[in-house]
Length: 148
Image 1 (cartoon, rainbow, N blue to C red):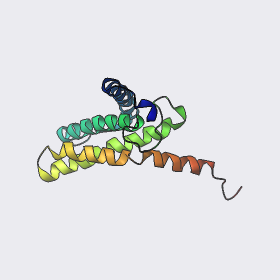
Image 2 (tube, one colour):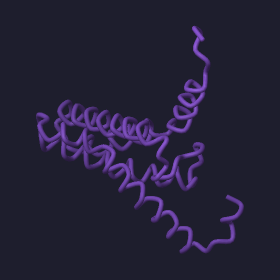
Image 3 (cartoon, helix red, strand yellow):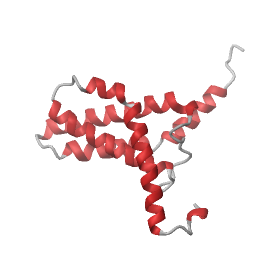
Image 4 (cartoon, rainbow, N blue to C red):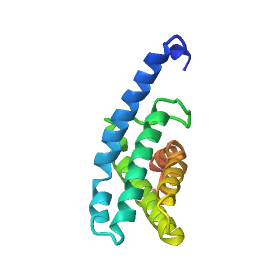
């Protein structure tokens, strides 16, 4: 981030907004199959609150991680074709799991507030190790099979 140390605060915020905007487009498009299933889920009010929270927080987290505002490792750009299937599956798991846990927390407590807090924490916690998971899968793909 040394090259960005001379940027003004406005330029840094503008850069972060760019990353977050493209992350939001990416996350929202790649999780469409999960959102399709959530349309028919039980407890629609709880699902909508938790899913919306998961989508927003995941978008902000991906933009923040991709821009290395919080450096968790290399994050692929939205158009990186080689990682597209893995990103689609991973983001789908993030939104699905965060929504499920958020709905269960709302039903358990009887309050809507866990429908915001729980999916937010789960989304960030599951997205954090994505670069590590991506690296492990890349190494696994390059490994010579035992029978060869």
